[in-house]
Length: 188
Image 1 (cartoon, helix red, strand yellow):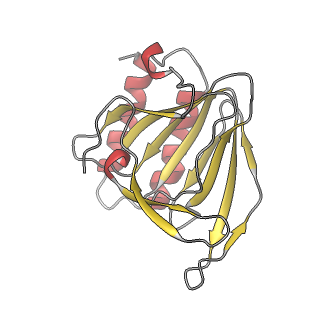
Image 2 (cartoon, helix red, strand yellow):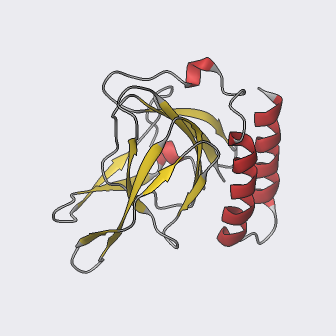
């Protein structure tokens, strides 16, 4: 494990293990820790940077033994994107290489109506937060049609096991899914 990544893991373990730590504290302090990690692109092992020709890849880098948080590299091939989806837990997204576009949505819980909010572009070193309390639904895409982009995600659970949702952009209808990882079988 690269020393920079090891320091990040130690910091996140200390942060999430604090007695009575709240989500706002984790998002604030975790954002700083992740920002320090993605400020330099020299620590991620090559095996976690491999794109797939058709689908973005989600590689598990670390999962806290108590499943308080997990760390994942997202590898975006040229032009790849996610469906509109949620997370159901807090999350931090740090841009490491390339750039991605995050298109957030607000969803009316009564009608399912989806309203697009202001799109953000994440460039290296930028960290975005998601959570059911601050906004949890978005579509993410690689900005580039000719190069790979990589972001590092930290979630408040073993995200590969979490039951989440994809949403139809027109109707807002939700469909449940479990993402799993490109480097691990799906475990529910």
